[in-house]
Length: 112
Image (cartoon, rainbow, N blue to C red; front, side):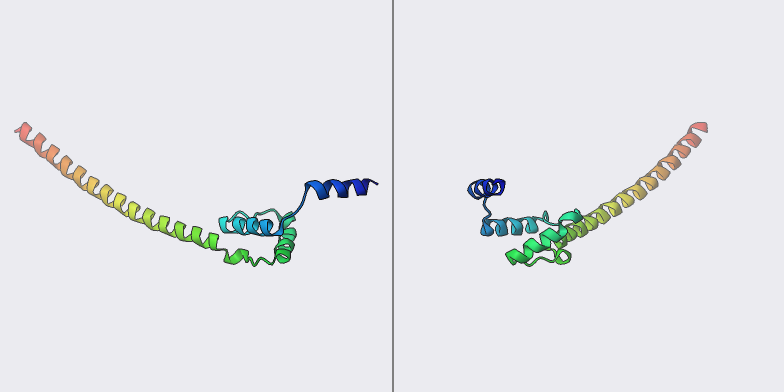
């Protein structure tokens, strides 16, 4: 009896649209939100992908590769900025040394 009530309730209020589910999963894969670190759902996800006939290789994920490209670009920008800062620091040291020499000369001139 309870089983019948549950079947009637769920059949009226809950249904699964395969096309919408497939579209949503593909959207999640594209955004990189499909693969999580929760091991308990891994097998369930794999089964769902098989049932919906969605090909997904988490190792060859385009989102990961795009993020990697962005990180490599950031690294290059960081290296360039760091080089500029090092050159500025070196230039500042040279200017400081020249300033110290000028101060010594000024002290010598005042002492005479």
